[in-house]
Length: 298
Ligand SMILES: [Zn+2]
Picture 1 (cartoon, protein in one colour):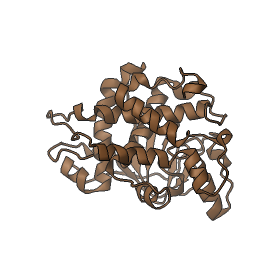
Picture 2 (cartoon, protein in one colour):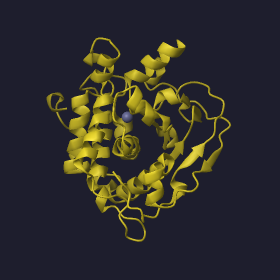
Picture 3 (cartoon, helix red, strand yellow):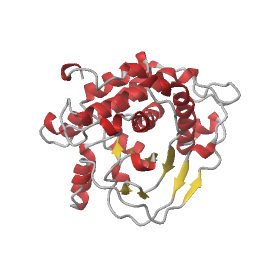
């Protein structure tokens, strides 16, 4: 997915948060990947991170410094640089949801904070490292992304990880923000796991919201009336679907050499994640009622 070179970006929508003292691991955050995070980090550190999956305690952020991402003013910048691509995605997502929020019952849309970080970051959900993957922290109403994750998508998850795959990841986390605003997040029982659990319903709804944005992205315009994004090609969609599949719980479990155990799923299977992404892309956000469908249709 490419930006129109002439699109004007407001770079203040994304900030970079400097490294602070890390006190734990984003216990209350919701990310793009589930099982892999715990498996990987435990593998390398031996630290028990079970709190990540059960949405545990919320800690106070410490020593936080944030600075605006500079030098991202046009779509051409977003095409050339990954940080600027995050700024471009934030501009398009913000304009899209400002219009579409009422469709999912959100009357007063608010722009989330969006922080880039490297290595580790302190948040209202506790400290996080790059191994956490991109995540949304509900108490902060903020997205946290270490763009090194996109390299990980290629090297560890075996996805192609192109620009639309990166946008899918951001669109998914922004989808969690919409769930925070709609009340879906609070209403869900996040203690359970399994393919029809509320936890998975939340995650595939976020995938669906990402699809809804990408489906409408060529209609979203900057202040001067230029669309942020050019039409999506079939190859780019395949790239995003490839990423959605790569972070499916079954795919991650199989790649890790373990048994595929649906009872432990938190984010849904590759097939579920792809299907809900496409449901949103075709039908918009009102098609994303993942809590309204029976388990057999999830
Ligand atoms: Zn998620």
